[in-house]
Image (cartoon, rainbow, N blue to C red; front, side, top):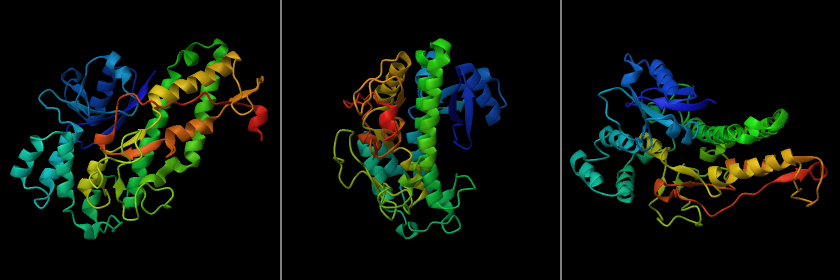
Length: 351
């Protein structure tokens, strides 16, 4: 089964979408779309975030849909996202960083200290341009973005939609790869999963992919920033607030450099999508498939059950379970938070 990925070159000049079933197909299609005039055998694929070489299908299958890869030609050297963004900022403006001193300080420190260096120089950005919105008013902010992005708010809303689509396709791929989907009798499990995915997508579309989360002009109750576009880290998944008060803050509306760095901030699921939510979705659908479900509302057995899709929607796509965090506060170990098997009978659903 094919997955959708994103691929770019080492200079990040062009980003493409590629659907592929295996590593060879992914490299061949990427090489062609990026216009590499070399043999595919001379190219290699790396994960953009950390630089990991993808050298077999087994490892590729562990990576989620919409993972961003860097396709390198024979003599090119891998540059991770973090180093790329840093080098971009380091060379962008003399006012931001004195190259020699700041680069030495940066390279000699650990990850947390690196971000302190970032923050120190970002504060020196021209605050006078922060509240400007139109491309014509602040053209350097839009460098590298699609011409169709006319305002900062439109661009930031687009970034949210990309993340939400990523969560949807990650869920879709996991469900359609399950045994229930591929091996159920008469395709009944497949039909149940396809209906759930359709309902989930309708909810996401009706909310416009929660585009208001990064839009500073959206309602205060929706957006994750203040009226100027300043975002604050929510802290570790199990904490109420960030331990690095006044350090883990960023305003991507202020400058192109901060906009780029903002891409390293994560929308962290307290209840994890892969480890907790998706397995419970599969379990809920499997219970209905086997006729062994229980209504979560009335706790009675019934012949007709439905998935409470809206509950899973809230956990996957909304602030009920998501928090915006600085990369230092993004804990990638197992979260001790659980989802549930949410099924409901027709009678309770109609109430």
